[in-house]
Length: 355
Picture 1: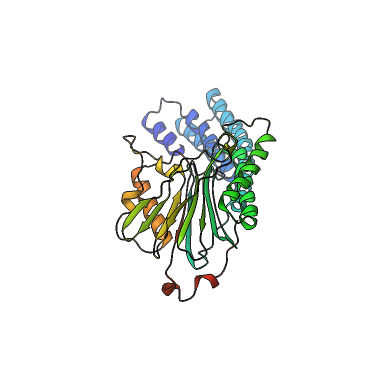
Picture 2 (picture 1 turned 90 degrees about the horizontal axis):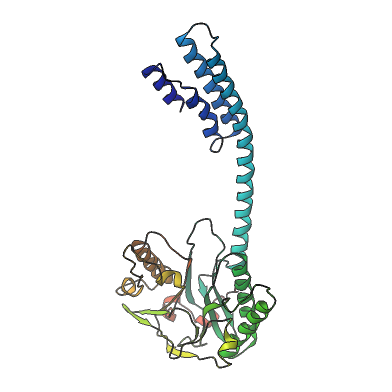
């Protein structure tokens, strides 16, 4: 802006350049430090004085005095604005640190290995500033087998985080205590219903789509209770199988409308296969033509027997399909690593605590 004022003054001497100089410190206030904001204002005053003296060796015109006074006053105002912006940035930084701490507490980093199985997770927020979302996942080792959950809470903000925290807390409690997967689902449902009953603004629209999975102790069978969630995929030997439930079920939080029955589906899980689960932020992503993303084609073909590589392949295809996510996206993958590739029996591998 200083350079523009000088160029304009030399090119068109009849043009008043004081408005350009007066804007210098105001522009500097939100992006520079206090010292540089004041320095920019002082520089604008100096340039204005020099330009005035270039036209007349005697600095006495009323317009020049008003111009320089205006620059000085706006510099003082810009200094105050700079302090206000600095406080706002500090508050935002503190809020982001709190949000990051909450997010890490709700969804801490998953272990790479659980019972000898390879585990990977990915989380992508629709907006960079929105660190707290409604997507969730957890893996927990229990006496009844490895149990997992992935879900998506309707809504955003603290109400969504409350439901996420409730679901994960109840899942970890009942997963350790109850031997049957349907009982685990009912236990989580009871806790969600209790939270909804204590919320003044709760409605039947407060729900969680989720899949609860139990891997048998011999790692050969997957048992799934799909509560209105996108069907997971099994990636094995270059092929992708969609693990659709035989009977649809209502999401968690709406169980009182559906009755006590909890449908559970069983699928064989061969060695080397990777189970891929994700939230609807992935399959509801659209391209410019409004076409939804299909994760099956990018996962079809030769892929490493590594859950992280599988998820990275899917997400790379997702971001080629759409430039911007409309919703948060979470994914969880677990690979049935053959015993020979880990060199020991999976039952004696390090156990993992859930988040």
